[in-house]
Length: 147
Image 1 (cartoon, rainbow, N blue to C red):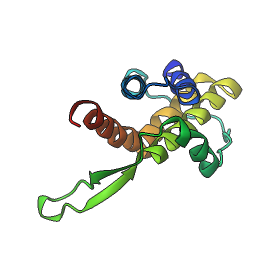
Image 2 (tube, rainbow, N blue to C red):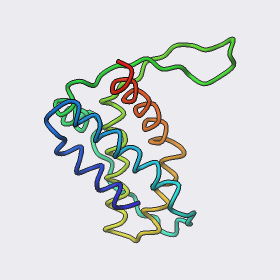
Image 3 (cartoon, rainbow, N blue to C red):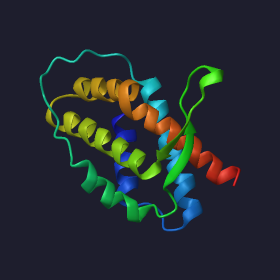
Image 4 (cartoon, one colour):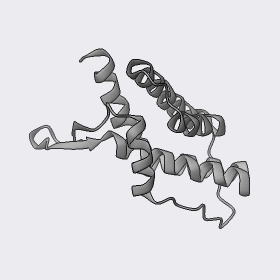
């Protein structure tokens, strides 16, 4: 789990230059995060450690130039078939949200213990970054194979 989180952070900092390679590698790294969630077991949080939260706008601004092909994409809110409202997703925003969460996981692994990092990773997946990952992953799949 921590290896997948750190690999994501390293990728965001230094993605491949060519668009096709960048998107293919991003799809793989997102898949690794999803698999890591399913492979790490449930743990209890025992510490009151608060990992630092980064300034989202600054993080977004740092990520955006590294992924110029990514931007707004169409998505649909899950719900009843007679009430499917169209929405938009923002791939750069997704990348930044996931990066912030992985930085928190990494901080906890370094400053508390692996159980705390695992708890944060699993909790974040279920409540926040997992949805960003799934919607972004679908968008990248379309860009790679259905464009």
